[in-house]
Every structure is written in C-alpha cells, then in structure tokens.
Image 1 (cartoon, rainbow, N blue to C red):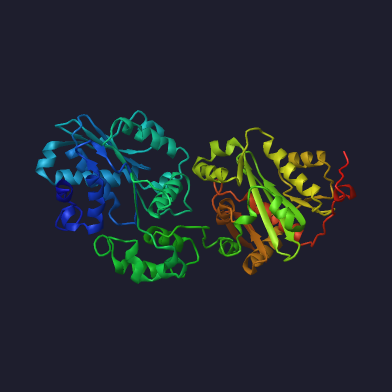
Image 2 (tube, helix red, strand yellow):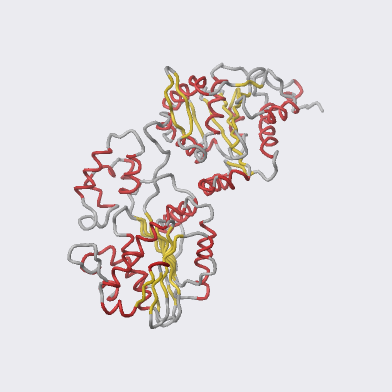
Length: 530
C-alpha cells in the first residue's frame, strides 16, 4: 500500500499521489487485494474479483496502479502480469497512466524499463513484466501470467470467444498460488451478454449470499432494487451511490447538467446515460425511432410461467391458436410465434422460439455470444443439420394441430419470401393450402403492429418474458410511411427481429377472431386412427 499510494497521477493538477487524491473506497479496494496475500503460505486468498463502477470513477487509474505495484513488489523472477483490454484504445487507457507514473518518479524510472511500441514494462531487477494487450486469441495464447486484470468487461461480453480467451490468459495461475484475476467494468450500453452477463450474475449472487465463495470479491456500485422500483435512482441527491469518486474525478454539477439534457429524450441517449453514469442495467433497448410497443414489452404483462420450453402450458389453457413464421437466409434466424386465445380471460398468449444455422454464428460474430445465451435458455435452437429448423417447426405446428386448436383456414401466417422449404414440409404433414396463408409484409403489417402495441399496453397480450424476444423488440425500428408504419432492423445484419415479425404474422391471423377446428371424434373418445 505504501508503494501504491505513492504513485503519482500526472494528469491531475499538482501531480498528486494516489494516496493524496484517492477516496477511501479506492484505497479499501486495493488494500483488500494486496492484503489477501498470505506471506507465510504464499497463497492469494482472493483469487477473483469484479469491480462495477460508473464511468469516470478512475477505473483505468486503479488498473494501472494495482498492476504496477505488483510489478514493483513481486518476488517471482521473470513473472508475467497482464492487463487485458478489449480494444487498442482501451489498452492505451491503462498503459499510458502506468508509463506516466513511472516517469514521474526517478527511482521507478531507474527500476522499470518501458517499451511503448509493444506496451510492455519490465522490472530490471527481477525481469518480471507487465504487458497491456488488446485481446484476441492470438495475443493471449501461451501466457503464464500470475495476475490478470481485465478492463471494460462489458465489451468482452460482445465477443463470442471471450470465455476461451480468459481461460487461456489465466491458465498460468494453476502453478502460481499468488495469482489472481480482477475484472473492472461499467454497465453495458446494451442488455448484458456473454461473459459480462455471467460474471455480473455470479458477483451479485456472491454479494447477496446466494453463493458462498470466499475467494471471490464482488464490489458492485449499483442501486438496490427497492430504490429502482421507487425511481429513487433518478434523484440527483442519490447519484453518489454509483459514483464513489463524486467530488474528485466526477462532478455532481456535470452529472446533474447531463441528466437534465437526457431526462426527456426519446432515444437511447437516456438509457446509455443511465447505464454509464448510474449503472442502471439496460433491458429492452429504446431509441428515438424504436417501436413504441417496446415501452410496454418489459412491463407487468410478461408471465415467465408461459414459457417453459414446451407448448403444453399454452395449449392446455387455449381455446384456439394461430401461428406465424419468418426467416431469411442462412445467416438469419428462423422465427416461430404461436398465439393462443385463453378460453376464459380471452387474453392472447404469445409463445416464441427461434432457430439459427451455424452460418449465423460464423458470419455474425458480434452477436454470437448473445445468441449463445439464448441457446442456453432454450429459446433459440442451434441447428446441427441443414433441415433441423424446418423439421422442428413442423413438429411443433403438428402438435398444435393434433390438439385441435388450429382453425380450418388461415392457421399459419408466413412471410411469402424464403419459406418454400417450410411450406413443402408442412404440406407433407397434411397441412392444407387453406391453412397456410401468405401474409403481406412491410407497411401492410401496420394493423398487426398497431394492434400488438395496444394489447401490450392494456395487458390483453401476455408473453413469456424471454430475453430473446426482449432483444428482438429492442432491435426493432419503426419507420413512418404515410399513414402506415414499417418495422425494420435498427442495425442491418446484426440486429435480428425475425421472431418479432413472426409474432406480427400471427397477430394478423388472430385478429380474424378464428374458431378452432376441434379434435376429431376419435381423439375426443380416446381412440386415435392410424
């Protein structure tokens, strides 16, 4: 701690040391890490930690200071220490302060050798190194780092290969009992995904006592749920809760000024401000041109019990059902939506699932980690065979048909483009041409878009609360075309909305107020004809 607190921060007026400029919370965090080392046994008692703190609360300074202190004080010769950053720019945010701290102290400048072109600092006495790398599988391969600090973990959540990358980077700790891994991050500007989502969920469980892991240190500056429910996080008087460096590196006046600018914003600016400066986790992403139904999607009308991975729950309580399908090329999702009408309340019950060919994961690596999350939850199926999606969609539709819930006509609404193979599969299962209806797309879906908005708002449409659908809803962009509305993707390629379009197709059929064909006399009597 004496070394850590003596490091100078040169970009602050007067070049104060960390000890002079840092608040108590930062010193406590560093002391917990350093103090967890047992010199008698050589064991590090805290092997992993996560610090979640709002933007501009000196994360990069913490990263540089802690790792530089380990390089100075470490006893192992030819040791390796690693700061892992998601991009070159983020890597520079940690490497530059470390270099400045060294050059500001003659003794450190004599002890440590800086090689800026490779972002490497070497202890001349022990030959131990501190390397700052912009991460990919190649840069971390073969590393034997005792200590690894991962900066901006939320950005790694967008990398499909991040988990394997971390395992490679931290593999050397198996033979280094004094080693540890620290994750520093702000909240994500999108719904958490991948390794960020996993680490954050685990840290919360440890913090809340749901998981007993004495080797994991969670330090999470975020609002309690009860404050969020009362909108107390929007009171500027409470901004200090997620900004522990308020009054030092963070200005209360600046936060209040920026908060006023975005308070009435209709686009994603407000959500990003909340995420970055108040650590408020983003749910359904809302932008100025977002579909208005997204406002009500994540409201009180989601029933997780409706989604259990199977259809039985919905079929048991429905008097009639219709289906919608949508899909594009091999790098798109195939979406299936089923809407059942509750036999008593008459509410519409929405059940959705999507399928993805391996091509999607290969070509859309920026969303691959998110798709893997959905796959683990069961709402998205990764296809191992080229026709797996068609066969499984047909199986589900056949299940509804056997339950006698499909109407005789207009039971399955499909996008006319790209569904030829699915139509062939359904025809082979005995579905008639009258039951399969081509639903006009584009602005002709306006009635379904408006109808779904209203039913989400008044609670007469209930969905299963799947993260897949929340993501698709957040990706939806509304474009006004005369008196009609067109739903498109927010970002071409990576912003998938196919399951949502499938839901609109199903809405078009349910608005016809269909009646179920009913089961055959053989099924109702418990006898099935073969």
